[in-house]
Amino acid sequence: MKSSVTSLHLLDGGLLEVESSFVVPGSDFGRRVAVPIQMFLVGTSAGYVLVDTGNDPGVITDPVGTWGAALATAARPLMEPHHHPAEQLRLLGLAPRDVKAVVYTHLHHDHAGGGRIFPDAVHVVQRAEHRWALSPDGHAGKAYVPADFTTTRWTLADGDWHMLPGIQLVMTPGHTPGHQSVVLWDVPDLGNVVLAGDAINTAACIEKDLPPGITTDSVTAVQSMHRLTALAAATDALLVTGHDLALFEALPKAPEPLRKVGHRPARHHAPMLDLAAGA
Ligand SMILES: [Zn+2]
Image (cartoon, rainbow, N blue to C red; front, side, top):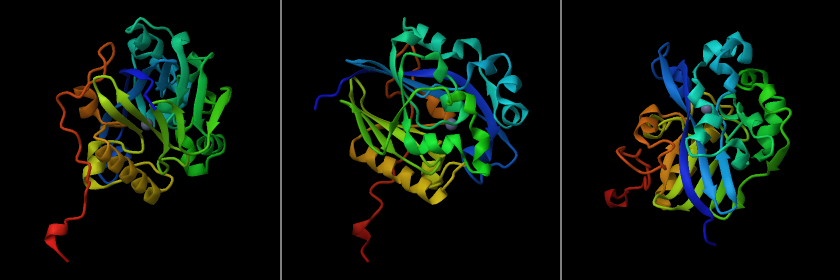
């Protein structure tokens, strides 16, 4: 089936300052690091699809009022007016009404905060994520802001879904129970792309074989990472991890289309078996 994907742009949602070990577990305890907030605008022959929506834009002026002091301190947003999704779309001559569908990798505050900017779009998340976000176990609740998702009219996916020609949703649980990644086939001038979301935080997670610093199931999270690295290696895809500042800085951002430039991709760790070495 021919891909319906016609373009791909990386939108800049600003930065989030967090404890380093949230990103790569066991690394630099007590050190704060800035990580990028990414959104992806996928052009298709049926209209635009947005992947993730960043922070609630209320944090541009009032982080504590929007998120509460505990979350706004643990994850300090560095979001300026031009990081508002509507402003990012304006760089491309577009407006929120041009977005026909919004896909969420998961419903954490730094991915689902801008959903209400798109009242006319179809909003897609995994059912397992929606269930969990509405009633997370106590330890996992801090990263969800119910106002981000309780009034949204959802289209719920149950596992892998061929959403549109050239756009596949792939279940990658572990960071959260219903996390999904988005695979794009045959993007013009780019080829195949795996948008990992927070199934893989940074290249360091791949290189050190580590799950995200925040997980609900670390074993499953590592298996999800391996699924994505194997898929990317097998299809020669650009693998875009969720919160890698070096990669984010290297990739062209809107209004430039996303291209492979200037960044050595993370090793995919495939194949891992050296048959030449013998038994
Ligand atoms: Zn995130």
